[in-house]
Structures are given as structure tokens and as C-alpha cells.
View 1 (tube, rainbow, N blue to C red):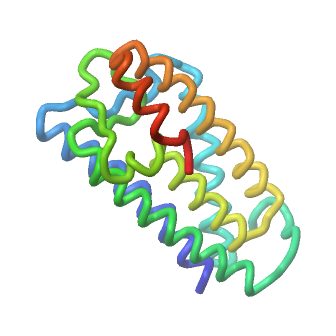
View 2: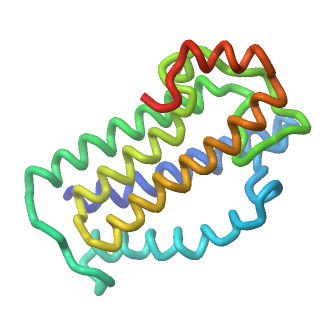
Length: 187
């Protein structure tokens, strides 16, 4: 049961991101900026596909790489709760983002600086939501490979946040710096 929720959470995140990108495209906004500033971003998809396979294989009982680090029904249900919180935060974030939603850094037409809704709680609620979902999935499937993905994912999110912060300072200047003084980077 918990494994199916983990699989559904990842699939739902992908659907939410892609549907938002397509919605933005219909509004005439190019929201998919992934890899345009840093070509190393294209190293991520093969690893993401392996991650998806491990979750799918774990959920349906197929052979998978890695071994479980522990087995606990309680931690698995805690993982479901954390995934659910991550999904709620993600949904709240993309709603709060409005027309400023982008995948990647957009210095050409970034939209307005969003400081309300989820962005009044965290400057990076989407990355925080993704991290919560990754943590929840690890608690559901405590596989050592998923632990590596959790650590690498958080490192990559932080790397992207630091790149985006530099860009946001260039775009919004003092408005963004004042926002940084009021709202924490994560939660």
C-alpha cells in the first residue's frame, strides 16, 4: 500500500510539473528553461529514470538494485505522511507561483517576483516539497540506493537554489534582497 503511494507521489509530481509547463506554453510563456544555462543539467535525466525504475520495481515487486537498510511499517507510514505533505506544499507552491513558474532559470522574461502564498513561508517551497517527497520515499523504501538519491537530490536542489539566487539578485536587485531578509531559504 505505502509503495503504491510512493509511486503515485512521484508520478503526480511529474504530471503537475509537465501540466504547468504546457499551461504556461498555452499562455505564451516558455516555462521550460531546463539546461539552458547549465548543460550539466542533462546528466540528471538518466539518473532520474533509474530512480523511477527503483520505485516502480519496489512498489510492484520486481527485481531492483540495492538492499533495504531497515524494515519498519511505522517509518513507512511516516514516509507516506511526509510524501503527502510534500505534495501539498508542491501544489500550494505552483498555485502561488502563478505565471512566474519556470523549470530552470529564465533571465530573459522571468515574470514578477513572487513573495506571497507558499513563497511567504519559504523562498524555495518547490525544492523543499521535492526534498520532502524524496525523504518520504526513502522512508517507504529504505534502500541504500534511494538514500544516495536523497542525498544527491538535496545537494542538487541546493546547487540550483544558489544559482537561482544569483540570477534573482541580478533580475530583481534590492527587492529580492529585502525578500531574503524576511523569508528563509527553505523552511
